[in-house]
Length: 241
Image (cartoon, rainbow, N blue to C red; front, side, top):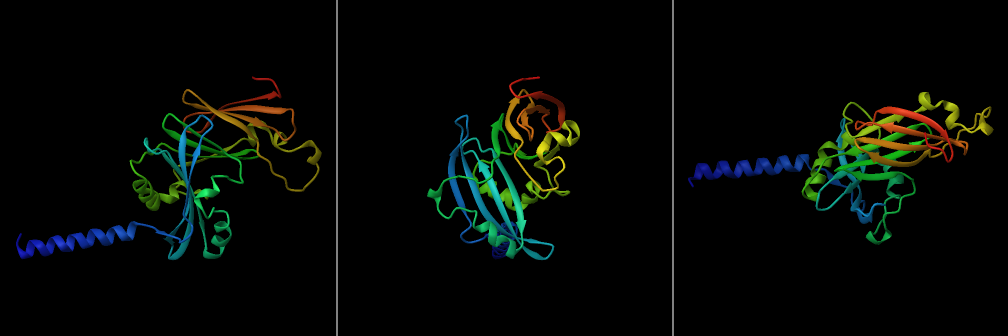
């Protein structure tokens, strides 16, 4: 190899290295936690929780990422939340400090892996949020490299770049009274509850079983493969439409 060729090769290597540093997110020290868990159907997976240091509109942004990864087949799902430095202080308290603290979560949600696609359902009255992904990565490193560059695609604060989060609003189909207890009909006090009883996949559709604010109210909601409503049916407790 001639001297000129050697120098070109060195400069090219340095350029690639610097480019990699520019696109690789930093990790907030002490924020990384990984644990092993099992879905209700026996599927093993890993749950990741960490805070990435990013730049957004010229400001330092602390991005908390909660991700699910199935070793072997490589399916991966994540959701992200951006914080300022002050806002990040509170969320750090929610991240387990040691691997032996388990995968427990304070908030209830329904996590499924079906036909190579993750779907994570969250409910607050008539608003259902689904984080979903059919992405696959051969290694954890490749998965995190992708998240570092595309974390906004699964942001829980949706915007033009959001790709892996869908919102389902059911107030019009089921009526707002379905989600408000009769005892609070004339009461302005705020309230909240989890309206989702269960989720299953039938063919290419997702079927959600809903519970109203009053015990007897029930509903079945069918979503298509793109998490759009295709059917809603009300029924009483113990009945099926």
